[in-house]
Amino acid sequence: MNTLFIPLQAQAAGQAAAGGSQMGFWMMILLLFAVMYFFMIRPQRKQQKELETFRAGLKKGDKVVTTGGIYGTVDEVTDRTVLIKVDGDVKLRMDKNSIIRDYTNAQ
Image 1: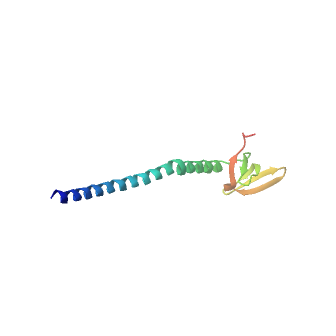
Image 2: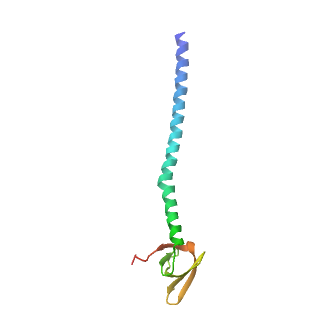
Image 3: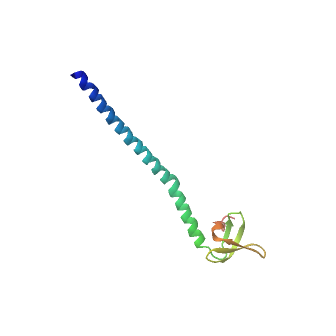
């Protein structure tokens, strides 16, 4: 009778161990997503919010750089576009989303 009881006990212990490893697997997946959120997604959202705030606060006289690498001074700002004075009388009308940074103090 003892020989019959031992395999059943071992089988129950094996199932309990399998349940514990599944719990560990899900904990690792959850930990992986938490790390990805705090080190990748959250900083990117913060940077995007700062860029949107910068673009909303553009005003005449700001020195800016576009995504194409064009340096200029803001001459006029509308809801969706910005008129940039590049050199002399050369002015370019660009979409606000193409402005990426301010270089007023970078000289």
